Image (cartoon, rainbow, N blue to C red; front, side, top):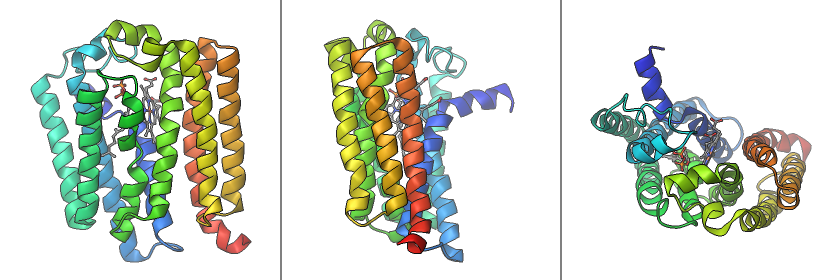
Length: 294
Ligand code: HEM
Ligand SMILES: CC(C)=CCC/C(C)=C/CC/C(C)=C/COP(=O)(O)OP(=O)(O)O
């Protein structure tokens, strides 16, 4: 890829968006009983591409708004917007084009509900979280996390044309997962956030309080991840996976609370990504295996 394309591509925060799209695909798979039919495969493809583009647009818009903040933090200073390699105008056009193209795909080949929900998610992250909440309150990622939690709802809406309780349950799981995911990172990046003037929880309330919050959230998250089994939505394969992953996350959070080190915070952050990826993979495997095992 030429370096200019690479710069634009990196603005879409590809790794984060990959997991977001994966969670949306699981939402789609769970909305269809059994294997999808020929026509459903078309909708799955269109919804995947549409959600991918709009999520990438939201990430690029975030880079546009945070150009100066990104330039102050080591983790983000390399971004083309922060370095001045891409102008505000170029970034705005790029984000608008991705958003328009993704929305059009969702409107034409999926359904209007999915388009509107995806657009609302774009506004939730790019405007409400980035512009309003992030510079204002240490609860920024708790409230703003609602938009990052939407992908299973978008996937479900794409296949069913409605918002089912099953999808809302998956949304709740990502919503509760987000605080320990982000605060683990914020713990070993506290000084960077302080310098950038952002009121992240470890900056405003200190390390120990943040670690306690992480520990409490991992337990609430573990309880919430049992709900798909308890409501009959998923089977034993999912339950065993959720218990192992959830207890693993609680164990990391306990260690982090009692014996803090930056290295442990980094490992906890990495584990959070593994946790969500495997939990959603387990939902998928369970969905196809359960009819044979029950
Ligand atoms: C408001 C909600 C969220 C916040 C504030 C947040 C924050 C962050 C931050 C700051 C990073 C960057 C780590 C780095 O530069 O090393 C990151 C990485 C990551 N996040 Fe999140 N996150 C949120 C929601 C999500 C959601 C909903 C997902 C997926 C469903 C997700 C998946 C990931 C992944 C996969 C990475 C790793 C990226 C890489 O390895 O380069 N995040 N997150
Ligand atoms: C339409 C749709 C599905 C949208 C999804 C929205 C989206 C991309 C959510 C992911 C959240 C995310 C990248 C947080 C990074 O935090 P940050 O922005 O504080 O991180 P930074 O410091 O790296 O910029």
